[in-house]
Amino acid sequence: MGSRWRDIQQAIVSSQFWKSIFRVGIPNTNRKRVLAMLGNVVLHLHPVKTRKSGVKMRYTWCAGGVTFFLFLVLTFTGLLLMFYYRPTVEYAFVDILDLREQVPFGIMREVHRWGAHAMVISVWIHMFRVFMTGSYKPPREFNWVIGVILLVLTLLLSFTGYLLPWDQLAIWAITVGSNMASATPLLGIQGPGTSLLKIGDIQLVTSTNDARFGLLGGRFVGAGALLRFYVLHCVGIPLIAAFLMAVHFWRVRKDGGISGPV
Amino acid sequence: MSTAPNSLPTPPEDVSLDGVTRRSTLKWMALAWTGFAAATAAGLTATVRFLFPNVLFEPPTRFKAGDPSTYSLGVDERWKEKYGVWIVRDTNSIYALVAVCVHLGCTPNWLAAQNKFKCPCHGSGYYVSGINFEGPAPRPLERAEIGVSGEDGQIIVDKATRYLYERGQWKDPKAFVKMA
Image 1 (cartoon, each protein chain N blue to C red):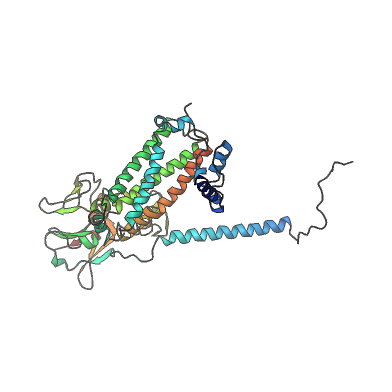
Image 2: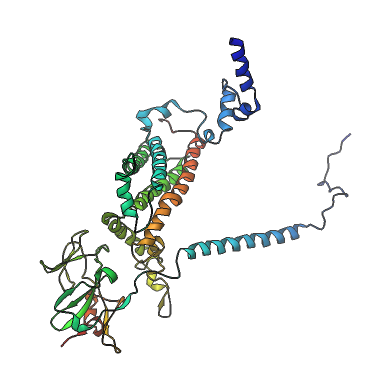
């Protein structure tokens, strides 16, 4: 009985299928551990070795890890919400109400919303920790810049998601927020230098081709803005953020792992 | 036995270069990179231009607002929903106020009981004239160009042209319609 079980086990482990997935075997030596890490696209983003201080909660606060975890939660819950939410003036608001009333586990939207708030907070905490431990210093300056871009993308995700419930709070908050785009130098209708851009008496930048218009797809927050913000929120910004996160984690490894206490 | 070469080795005679020279390589490379750069620039231009549609399904800035005699004294809200404009008639003129708060762009409400415009976002308040008196609004509401059509005598409002109080433009003849 025992030997038959071992035979089956042996047959599975020595099959081509098994060996194509577990190419290194049991990683019982340092060499095999390194090979296993480097041969796997997900694992190779992480350092092969981690400093003792790198897994100390008191040192890292795990704020970056929490942020990434929240990003995964938001991606998953957001995907679920997309099955019910329609980004049109006619349906958006009622779909939001229906997500609470007509769908099992009506808290899914709440999880997405509170998760989003939590991610904005955790990203700041992560930045604060990195600053306080001096982890932005050489050779990690490049990764600090990537991190700042990721911070901006997080805030943009928060901003674009804010419009989607399509209630009064959302519409007017985005009206106020997007008005800032009209103050863009040269590209916004009220921006510095914009009035200099003209041929004869004809202004080149108008309310239908300035930066604010490009953001809203209209002269005010309407159907075009709702659709643009939806696409940016669900596809555009998450794609860029996911790519930069991969770079961010890979750079941590390339710069010698999580910085240690001096 | 072996002698150290004093000059670079010459390529073997039997290697055929098919007429490829340094010059011809550089020429093709220049052509290829120029083509690539041009295609990239064209693609980027098309992408940016794609975001700005040719047709806007928004209400026009210029609209006919009916006969002046249909307006009685005070603030008229009939065009607010569609065009975002209040038509106000005072004792001797009619003017068009743009219903966009000059603080951050929300739409104020007309509070008839308190005889003022009040913005719900941050509490800016304006008199019937459009002049601000409370809240964070830094200047009065803007007035739109207004006139009477020569054809049918209807009021014509054009939101594209604004008249600003702080620049003394409310006295401009196009900023109001004189009423007897």
